[in-house]
Length: 159
Image (cartoon, rainbow, N blue to C red; front, side, top):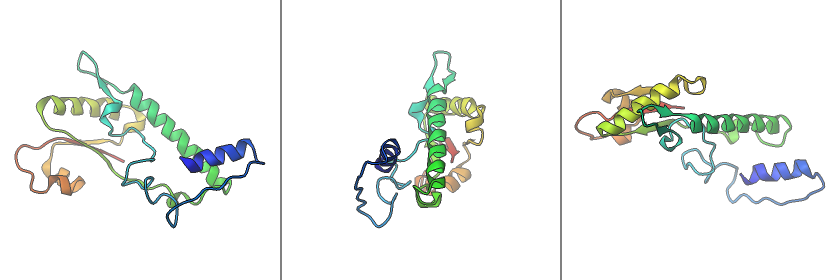
């Protein structure tokens, strides 16, 4: 975020000088590291709070679509900055990580299934996957599924 702001300010006023200090040896290694989930770009794949349940049980995905569109604009902006030589190669600062939602309980399972149906019908989310298969969930999230007993809890996976 700070780097993006600094680049934007420099674009607006090329005479401006600034000093940015990175505590670590390279960018995107602490709070912006994909596994830390802070300062990262959200594409709204599996953040459940980006969708809401309507009174009729259907799912409103408008907020998720808006957030995903904003993330796509960020990707375009970063591409521009890379082309201009203002940022390093994308593999230096973009780290894809799987996004997963894991729920249990009849009501939550029903909501996740409806959410998956609504979102995967939209082109931005068409690759989302849903499963109640325990073996598939073990593949997707081995630590969460390790030693888990009982009925399978559904999972939605996207990246």
